[in-house]
Image (cartoon, rainbow, N blue to C red; front, side):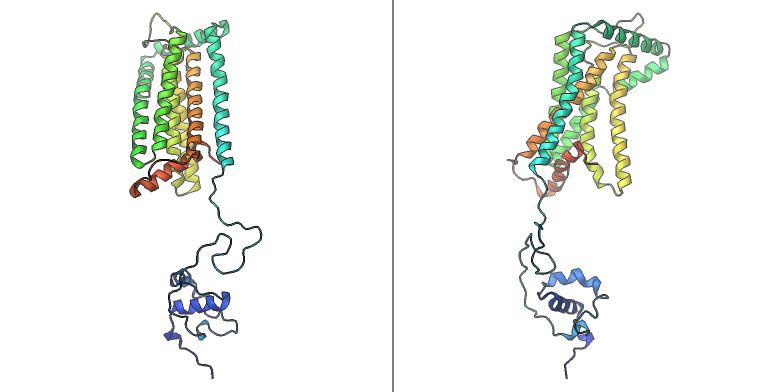
Length: 345
């Protein structure tokens, strides 16, 4: 008569281990049994002969070394790999990096085309452009000068989102990223702001365009007019801060929340850049072409530095690994920046 073990004398791990032995012909390590403890109600009668699973003798208590993971075999049995199955390979091919780099470079070139056209038109004093600038500046200035409350609100906006506060905000974000370990992203942010500012200052000196002049000026500004420094810095700052904080939206709980947050961030960046440029025209310190040139130059600089940063990230890093306490944050920011710059959705 076949000897039967009592059910009370067997543990759940032993029963499940016997099921695995009889079904797959392998012996699982003890740590694997815990993964299947919640399935005990499904495997009470899993024997091939219809007997309870714990009828078979107990599995040996000797410690079985865990076999090495093979990308071509299944994790639950020793069956041969399926045809055409190559396993899980980290997805970061050169083709994907090249595609993103190409898109960023194309965006920079496309943005530089209208900026170059504006530079040529301003340098040659094209009459239709000058007429358009003068008419729009006169109308906006007339409406602003007739409403002191509106003029005060516009002046407050241009002071809050001026070059100084935006540079401080980007510098603070870069310092925070550097402290968290994402040093490449921090350097990209600083280089983008510095490069854009130097280009704008150089063009002002090169072209030497005068600012609008009115009998009853609402505001005053020093220096040359083309391109607008406020519009340029607003485009740079809004673009840099947007690309820095977009990757953190991925950690939102729901997909709908992620989409709403992304739309809110993009809308906020656009509002800051557009309204800041328009306030300079309404206050009578810039022409329309100055503001448009500042927007396009800022967007082109952000796209160009993003392409250069993507190329730098494609090369192996030659710096020591970050500290364990900050390593996860560094990977979260430094690794997710490409997806933020070029979202798949």
